[in-house]
Length: 159
Picture 1 (cartoon, helix red, strand yellow):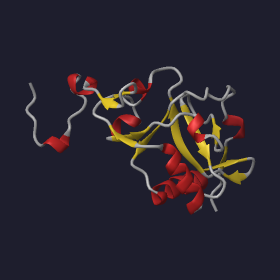
Picture 2 (tube, helix red, strand yellow; picture 1 turned 120 degrees about the vertical axis):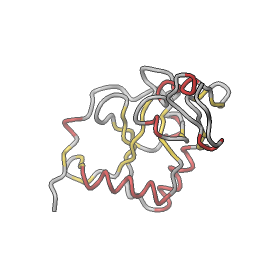
Picture 3 (cartoon, one colour; picture 1 turned 90 degrees about the horizontal axis):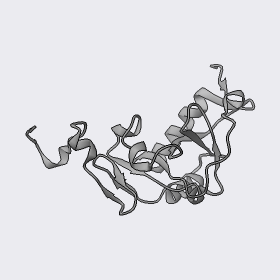
Protein backbone atom coordinates (compact mmCIF):
# COMPACT_ATOMS: atom_id res chain seq x y z
CA UNK A 1 0.00 0.00 0.00
CA UNK A 2 1.48 3.39 -0.98
CA UNK A 3 2.39 5.90 1.70
CA UNK A 4 0.00 8.86 1.71
CA UNK A 5 1.31 12.40 1.98
CA UNK A 6 0.16 14.01 5.24
CA UNK A 7 -1.39 17.42 4.64
CA UNK A 8 -1.82 18.76 8.19
CA UNK A 9 1.56 20.51 8.20
CA UNK A 10 0.98 21.77 4.66
CA UNK A 11 -2.32 23.55 5.33
CA UNK A 12 -2.02 27.28 4.84
CA UNK A 13 -2.62 29.37 7.94
CA UNK A 14 -5.33 31.75 6.84
CA UNK A 15 -8.89 32.65 7.68
CA UNK A 16 -11.70 30.92 5.88
CA UNK A 17 -12.83 33.01 2.90
CA UNK A 18 -15.79 35.33 3.43
CA UNK A 19 -19.23 33.89 2.67
CA UNK A 20 -19.45 35.98 -0.51
CA UNK A 21 -16.17 34.73 -2.03
CA UNK A 22 -16.66 32.73 -5.20
CA UNK A 23 -15.20 29.27 -5.53
CA UNK A 24 -14.53 27.90 -8.99
CA UNK A 25 -14.42 24.35 -10.24
CA UNK A 26 -14.17 23.19 -13.83
CA UNK A 27 -17.10 21.12 -14.98
CA UNK A 28 -19.42 19.67 -15.78
CA UNK A 29 -19.41 17.17 -12.93
CA UNK A 30 -21.54 14.17 -12.08
CA UNK A 31 -21.80 12.04 -8.97
CA UNK A 32 -19.43 9.55 -10.64
CA UNK A 33 -16.84 12.19 -11.61
CA UNK A 34 -16.93 13.75 -8.13
CA UNK A 35 -16.47 10.32 -6.54
CA UNK A 36 -13.52 9.63 -8.85
CA UNK A 37 -11.92 12.96 -7.92
CA UNK A 38 -12.51 12.40 -4.18
CA UNK A 39 -10.97 8.94 -4.24
CA UNK A 40 -8.05 10.14 -6.37
CA UNK A 41 -7.29 12.66 -3.63
CA UNK A 42 -7.67 9.96 -0.94
CA UNK A 43 -5.18 7.71 -2.75
CA UNK A 44 -2.53 10.42 -2.54
CA UNK A 45 -3.18 12.44 0.61
CA UNK A 46 -4.22 12.02 4.21
CA UNK A 47 -5.18 14.38 7.00
CA UNK A 48 -4.24 13.35 10.54
CA UNK A 49 -3.39 9.88 9.23
CA UNK A 50 -6.77 9.29 7.53
CA UNK A 51 -7.20 9.30 3.74
CA UNK A 52 -8.59 12.66 2.66
CA UNK A 53 -11.70 12.45 0.51
CA UNK A 54 -11.66 15.82 -1.19
CA UNK A 55 -12.59 17.88 -4.22
CA UNK A 56 -10.39 20.71 -5.53
CA UNK A 57 -11.68 24.24 -5.96
CA UNK A 58 -10.05 27.64 -6.45
CA UNK A 59 -11.18 30.68 -4.46
CA UNK A 60 -11.40 34.15 -5.95
CA UNK A 61 -9.39 35.64 -3.10
CA UNK A 62 -6.84 37.88 -4.77
CA UNK A 63 -8.49 38.43 -8.14
CA UNK A 64 -11.99 38.58 -9.56
CA UNK A 65 -13.71 35.40 -10.68
CA UNK A 66 -13.47 36.29 -14.37
CA UNK A 67 -9.67 36.50 -14.06
CA UNK A 68 -9.49 33.32 -11.97
CA UNK A 69 -11.28 31.24 -14.62
CA UNK A 70 -9.08 32.68 -17.36
CA UNK A 71 -5.93 31.20 -15.80
CA UNK A 72 -4.58 27.68 -15.43
CA UNK A 73 -5.86 25.25 -14.38
CA UNK A 74 -9.40 26.53 -14.98
CA UNK A 75 -8.53 27.88 -18.43
CA UNK A 76 -8.78 24.37 -19.90
CA UNK A 77 -12.46 24.00 -18.97
CA UNK A 78 -15.32 25.13 -21.19
CA UNK A 79 -17.69 25.04 -18.23
CA UNK A 80 -17.27 26.13 -14.61
CA UNK A 81 -19.22 26.04 -11.40
CA UNK A 82 -18.97 29.20 -9.31
CA UNK A 83 -20.71 28.78 -5.96
CA UNK A 84 -20.00 31.10 -3.07
CA UNK A 85 -18.46 29.92 0.17
CA UNK A 86 -21.91 30.38 1.75
CA UNK A 87 -23.46 27.94 -0.73
CA UNK A 88 -21.06 25.23 0.50
CA UNK A 89 -21.92 25.78 4.16
CA UNK A 90 -21.79 22.43 5.93
CA UNK A 91 -18.82 21.24 3.87
CA UNK A 92 -15.37 21.81 5.34
CA UNK A 93 -13.02 23.95 3.21
CA UNK A 94 -9.33 23.28 3.72
CA UNK A 95 -6.68 25.79 2.51
CA UNK A 96 -4.49 23.25 0.72
CA UNK A 97 -1.43 23.66 -1.50
CA UNK A 98 -0.78 27.08 -3.04
CA UNK A 99 -3.21 29.96 -2.81
CA UNK A 100 -6.00 30.06 -4.18
CA UNK A 101 -6.45 26.26 -3.95
CA UNK A 102 -8.88 24.80 -1.43
CA UNK A 103 -10.09 21.27 -0.89
CA UNK A 104 -13.74 20.59 -0.12
CA UNK A 105 -13.51 17.80 2.44
CA UNK A 106 -16.03 14.99 2.16
CA UNK A 107 -17.03 12.54 4.88
CA UNK A 108 -17.91 9.49 2.78
CA UNK A 109 -18.21 10.40 -0.93
CA UNK A 110 -21.43 8.38 -0.99
CA UNK A 111 -24.31 9.20 -3.34
CA UNK A 112 -26.29 11.40 -0.91
CA UNK A 113 -23.25 13.51 0.03
CA UNK A 114 -22.12 13.92 -3.59
CA UNK A 115 -25.68 14.69 -4.73
CA UNK A 116 -25.82 17.43 -2.09
CA UNK A 117 -22.46 18.85 -3.15
CA UNK A 118 -23.48 18.81 -6.81
CA UNK A 119 -26.71 20.63 -5.95
CA UNK A 120 -24.74 23.25 -3.99
CA UNK A 121 -22.35 23.85 -6.93
CA UNK A 122 -25.32 25.46 -8.68
CA UNK A 123 -25.45 25.93 -12.43
CA UNK A 124 -22.52 24.85 -14.53
CA UNK A 125 -21.95 27.81 -16.82
CA UNK A 126 -20.42 27.66 -20.25
CA UNK A 127 -17.68 30.22 -20.47
CA UNK A 128 -16.03 31.69 -23.53
CA UNK A 129 -13.00 33.30 -22.11
CA UNK A 130 -13.94 34.89 -18.84
CA UNK A 131 -17.13 34.93 -16.82
CA UNK A 132 -19.01 38.18 -16.30
CA UNK A 133 -20.22 37.55 -12.76
CA UNK A 134 -22.64 40.47 -12.74
CA UNK A 135 -24.67 39.25 -15.70
CA UNK A 136 -23.65 35.59 -15.60
CA UNK A 137 -22.72 35.86 -19.28
CA UNK A 138 -19.44 35.10 -21.05
CA UNK A 139 -17.12 37.79 -22.34
CA UNK A 140 -14.62 37.63 -25.18
CA UNK A 141 -11.43 38.63 -23.40
CA UNK A 142 -9.50 35.44 -24.20
CA UNK A 143 -10.75 35.33 -27.77
CA UNK A 144 -9.42 38.86 -28.30
CA UNK A 145 -6.08 37.74 -26.89
CA UNK A 146 -6.04 34.74 -29.22
CA UNK A 147 -6.05 32.24 -26.33
CA UNK A 148 -9.55 30.79 -26.90
CA UNK A 149 -11.42 29.42 -29.87
CA UNK A 150 -15.05 28.35 -29.64
CA UNK A 151 -14.94 25.02 -31.46
CA UNK A 152 -18.71 24.61 -31.18
CA UNK A 153 -19.12 27.23 -33.91
CA UNK A 154 -17.04 25.36 -36.48
CA UNK A 155 -13.81 26.46 -38.16
CA UNK A 156 -12.89 30.08 -37.67
CA UNK A 157 -10.41 32.10 -39.63
CA UNK A 158 -7.80 33.99 -37.69
CA UNK A 159 -7.74 37.73 -38.40
